[in-house]
Length: 102
Image (cartoon, rainbow, N blue to C red; front, side, top):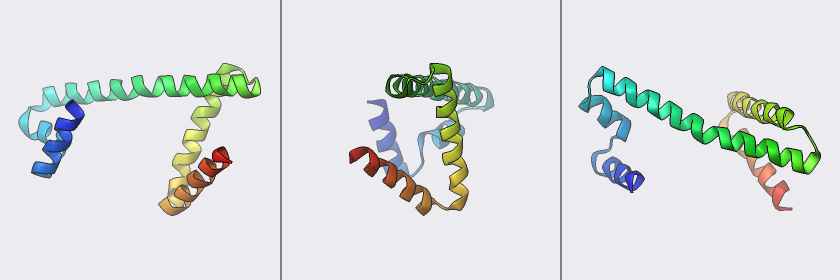
């Protein structure tokens, strides 16, 4: 419901929710909102990393700690590939998706 309301707010006003919060609240509440958003991002990323590590453990018998490191490394590699252009990164991701589908 909140995401739908935020999307409607963006469509109607042309500004996203963070912009509205910045104009509506003072610095302290904005800082608190920023910290809460960062905590939410980390809380969503941790299960993804651990899930990938467990999947690598089940598929290839890689220790979970090594799977966590491989997941982090693959994320850093994808971020580094952005410097070569979005199209090349899109091609790589498309290639990986088709590899999984095959």
